[in-house]
Image (cartoon, rainbow, N blue to C red; front, side):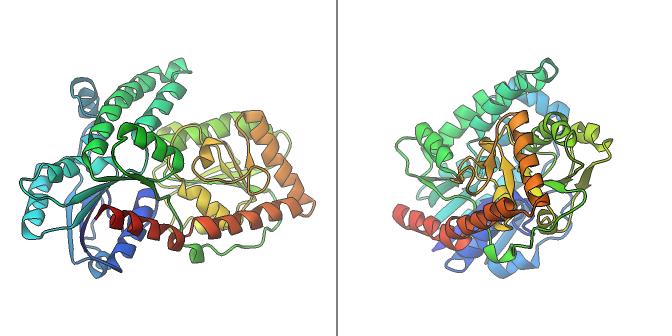
Amino acid sequence: MKLLLLTPQSPYPPRQGTTLRNYFLLRHFASKHEVDLFTCLAPANKSWPEPKLAELCIRVEGFRQPERRLSRRMLDALVTGKPDMGLRLVQKDAFALLERMLAEKTYDLVQVEGLEMVPYGFQILQMAGDRPLVVFDNHNAEFLLQKRAALMDGRSIARWPAAFYSWLQWQKLYRYERAFCQAVDGIVAVSEPDRRMLSSLAPRRPVVNVPNGIEISRYVPQPLLPKSPPSLVFTGKMDYRPNVDAMLWFGLKVLPRVRSQLDIKLQIVGMDPHRRLDRLRAEPDIELTGEVDDVVPYIHGASVYVTPMRVGGGTRFKVLEALACARPVVSTTLGVEGIPVRDGEHILIADDAASFADAVVSLLRDQAGGGERSRALGEAARSFVETQFSWKTILPQMDAFHAQLI
């Protein structure tokens, strides 16, 4: 099969959610099909094309991410009918490049990765004559994410401007996402809740759940050793709004409750820390690492891995990575949405500040007394991920969906 993959970021190197998913999809597709890649490059991406991508693909084409000032984004939010995500990667030269690719090769299937590449998906759907099948791999039900953000920010007067922005985006994303879902030939969701939500947008289109996975062999569990002080770890891209919200809530509402009972250290591991997190930097027991070469050593060093998510969607790589490393995890219900773990068997789940702090303290005290419960949670978590979230298990589901459509 001749397959064209459209990605909003270069899939290599695979360092965080979108690129991880796209890299492993690309590598899998290339082992079975003739694959071309059309991708957006961040302004800072100096190395192009990546040799690894050239090894996997027949043809690799990239365009530079356009720069949009915040003032322009705010104006677009008010006067255009399209959501910000539908405008973020729009570039005239990129449309011309994609048109040449489509003229020079007849593709059997095009897979659009994420909502930011939807403008180019619409370009393919509007081709004259026969067009390839178009599959939309929607990494989040984006309108739902913005709805949750609007409702969360609306609780605080100081966050009302952000809540208003999210409310506007929620309305626009609902219409935009629905229009594209109803136009494509098939839809891929990354969690069962997202699958149900996207099915409601396009009830006549086939929708399949192909969750995020991990390369199990990369995550070798390490012994859970006593540390003084014990370390709490969170990983993620730290200019991503749900991650910022999670760490502010944890640092300001949960951590003081833990700190009142035990000495601890919190490591927030991830690139591009947002300025809203500066208020946490002043705390001597909180470290914001910025970008690191590899998050796995930090996860291995965690006494407890925390996922205090209150906004967001999809299947979170960060949780899968922590489970695969056999770390004891404390999460909100939303933090493990789409991952069918059981509270008390694989992880601990808590949704308010007091119960979240109590769960963290209980595990730290368990470890001070030998760690039997913490190790049992970690071992069950590792076994769970091996069985259900290995890429080897997940990727054949995408193959089956493609075969069904063809």
